[in-house]
Amino acid sequence: MIQALALPDAEAVDLFEPGHLSFGGELRQEIAYRYVDPASFTKVRFQALFNARYAPAAAFSLVGSVRTYYDAVYDLESVDSIVMRRNPTVLLPDTLTSEQIDALQVQNLQGAEIRQHETEVRDLYAEARLSRWELRLGHQIVRWNVLEGSRVVDEVNPLDFREFILPSVVDRMIPLSMLRVDYYPNDWTVEGLWIPDQRFHEPAPKGSEWEQLQNLENLEHPAQTFANSEWALKVSGTLGTWEASLSYFDTWDDFPTAFRTITSPGGFGTAPEVEFHPRATRLQIIGSTLTNSFGSVIVSTEAAYVIGKHFGLTLPLFDPATNQFVGGTPDQIQTGEAETNYVKYALGADTRLFKTDWSLQMQQEIIPQYTQEIIQDQVSTIFGFFGRRELGYGAMTVEGLILYFVNENGWLGRPKASWRLTDNLKLAFGADLFSGTIGGPLPGEFNFAGFFVNHGRVYTDLSYSF
Image (cartoon, rainbow, N blue to C red; front, side, top):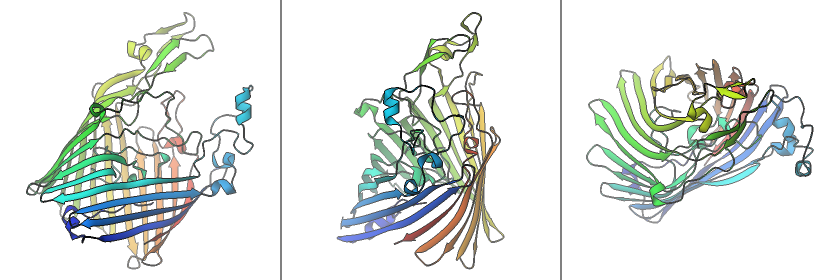
């Protein structure tokens, strides 16, 4: 997928001569075809990334990058072919309001939200370096992970789920306006972040092919004040043979909390009436990373202790004979959420064997103070396995990724083959394969990967970098 602007490391900043201006970027065409009935092309996207750096002084530079795309699939296929119906047996309810009738479109009977084109600024910041200090002010992305694809300590930027988790993590990251200050005493680095920008995870467009998570209406945003800013501090360096880091992040939860109230228990054959009052809640995340090499094997680990997380609760049991809930806790009835702390960690090993790069990873989330009313399992586990081999002196690369979601017994497989046609031109073919069950039936009980079991696709992309 499109890669964000590659920036020089701290030592390279001074190499930019005053007045130096550089450009780069990538042009890409992506085509995807869903082979599961109803089969359909689901993406014919033309996209481009342009980046630039200007250094008016030896230790000062301006960085910017813009990404834009146009998806022609909506000019070739009807929206109802692209966005399939998962469960309903009819397209429309029995009765419609006049407003709903006026809003109907023959080629989009489900009212799916369409984002056919978009232009966004990915980077736009000023960078300065003086002695042991480096400052970046503006729109930017910060990476804290040591395991590729891991989101254990790498929580600074929220994510865009418009195409589920299929694009690379950096491509899905939403840039934030912030001040980043790095200090380099000896061999250690101290990094501080001040983030006044308030943005949360972005679900896929409503009714679109990859819709899973949803934003509730009337989300209560925190006041845009200095006190409501996000703050982060990270210290990293070498401990013996280990590369280590310790971080603290005071942030808003990128998944706003629903907070429901049961206004009526319902009756026989009638669902309870529920009102939602969604708002952002605050988290404190204490994280650490460790990396070391043992011969040809590189071992990495990330761990985080998250304070103040809200977990959704199931509805209490309902007795239609008495028209009352049975044994429900106050949290189940009053808020639908339980606040508690949890632990998450990831372990990974990378090596090279038989001229092939191999990577194995395990990630877990554990809720120590668990109650049966919490929808999420007490322990959630994911295994990841990745292999890549170059053939023909790098002219061809074959690779494969498998993610296995233990709790739901579902997996995502991603085989891919790519060819380097020229130094700048690359062609790739691949597939996104899902296995599992959709989950449910209650809200929040969907399976993460199995939810898209009917969305398997093959794809091709052609990219030109310059």
